[in-house]
View 1 (cartoon, rainbow, N blue to C red):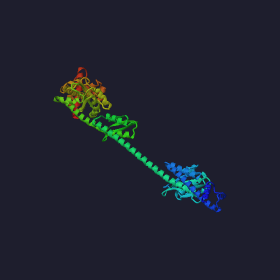
View 2: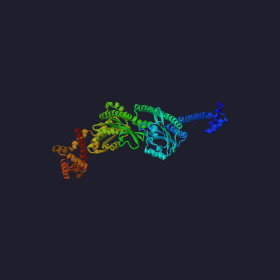
View 3: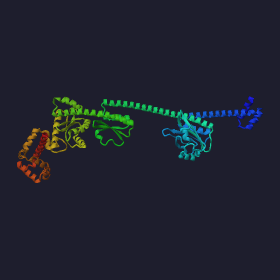
Length: 589
């Protein structure tokens, strides 16, 4: 009998429930009519078991698919798609909770048509969605708009109306008491979800919650790994750059040890940052930086010593490397200045010793001069320069003279230059370019103790004469000041003084006795070649006053004093007197 019932159950498992069919099969198998109820009961148990196996299979498949997802979006999309297919619903969607705001919003959908529905956002506890997401584990309705068992929101109802939704089943997604959101299926027709369907969706929601948390943890882990990799890459880049800086600093230190020039420093920086870099002298810094350049200055106290100028835009590392050159440039320039100061002091001593006559020290002096490319017996130029600021002029000329070879110094208020291939006209033009008005006297000679001493005396006397006679430009003591120049160049100072006294004695005595200025009147009158109007304007007197003074000079000397040979003698003597007066005035000051 048991065998017959098993055969009957096997046959019934493949056909729908039908009482007449069960009776027919029972009779055919020779079973008692009383066995029909038992058969029906067994058949229901068998069908329930089959449904449970099918549900388990579905859950396993869903779990496999969901766990295979690699990120949050993919996980949510799979959950929606599986839920919609397994329950045969019109649509499915997932909401995620926002804890601080106490709201839930639809994150992912499948089958939803309207943007208003896809973008729903509502407080927890309102509507079917808000109830499942915020409190109730399961919530459902067969007619959403007509259901007054939960709070409604007008905007949500309008979105439901536009989408055409009637029935909704919502279950909570939670992990260890943490409510993440809700999983929902919905229909555009009336539907009452069975307990089996509710259970199936609940199991999927549980899987989804775990998978979602897992995906979030994976995303968090990935983000941390990315942060770790980025930090590691940044550290490696920083270490590589620090190593580069260390190597570059060593190169800069080597340049300092080698006493390299600022130009060589600029070349080294240019190679390191792969951008053209040039050294700017402090005289070139006006108006910098210019467009398209980056300038890094060398500073000592409140002084700007120079700069390194890079062409074009620079990256962060290039700027840092360029800035590494600034303190090195400062050290180089200060070192040059200290060296220049020591050299200037030595040159000053040489100029003074040469002006006084080298004598027994000549051998030592000649050895020192060789360091400045000046060799005994070689052709040289000896120049004296008169200007407003002698020290500033010497500083301006330092680089030019260093390139050509030579020395400079200050002597009795004048700048003295002893060099090679250094014409006076070039010196005068160079100073004029810097805004300095100067008087330059030059003598070409050979480098011996006596010739240099004589040339220094001649050029300095000539500049004094040029200052006294208000002559600017460049002069050769032998020719450019005429007879007065020859006298100054070749006669002793005592002889020149005797010539002045002998020729101008009447005028000197008259001026001393009467406190007049006939000597100066005679000088201006002859300088203007007898032009009364011009001389009177220079003397700031009336022309008639000048004529009276000219007559007085004629009475003291001779009426023909301003003509012929006597005029020449008087003019030379007056020029010498003018120079002597200038010298006396300078010494008295």
